[in-house]
Length: 66
Image (cartoon, rainbow, N blue to C red):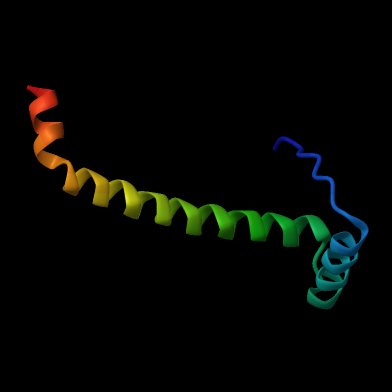
């Protein structure tokens, strides 16, 4: 696993530490869970937009592929 240095302002770091403490997890575990959730949501959003664009431009994409 590679490390990522993520600068957090003091308020955000305190909130992360407090949440981790309340959940009985490490701040790193909470942050990793948040990043995974964000990537999943954004990946789904981007796929939806890409699929819509592909449908909208299907004829052009087909002609370019010929």
